[in-house]
Length: 146
Image 1 (cartoon, helix red, strand yellow):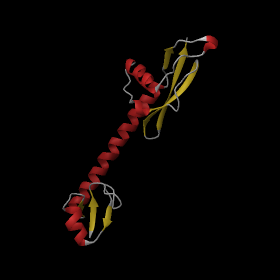
Image 2 (cartoon, rainbow, N blue to C red):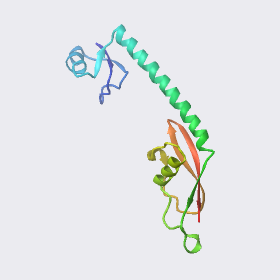
Image 3 (tube, rainbow, N blue to C red):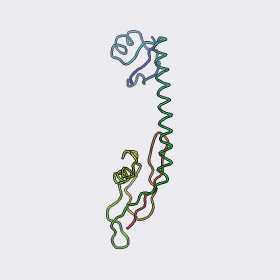
Image 4 (tube, helix red, strand yellow):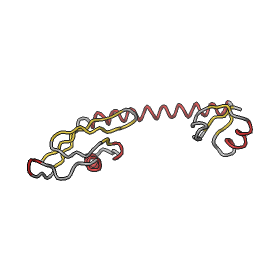
């Protein structure tokens, strides 16, 4: 029997996938527990409609991320820090501080999107990578000054 998975089921199938399984397994487990529906014309049409909606949403998200990337790459974030002898910086700039500065400028970026391998702890310009959507990344200039 062929079924369309409507939920991910570990080691069996992912949402939207069509697979052939044994009749008893399909009826008694997959369909009864809401993991899959039988393949028929109505369910195939619903799957196609859902795929079209997901593709449209994906395109919309990519467009928004591209626009945001262009805006982010034009800005520069300035951070004033205290320094000691030999311009040694006390403390460091973290992803949380970068997020807060972006919030002040009106950009809603999640802290998890900011890719910072280690905290910024030296004076000067630093490029910080921000993962916006999928493979769309923006580089923001961070300027650490005395």
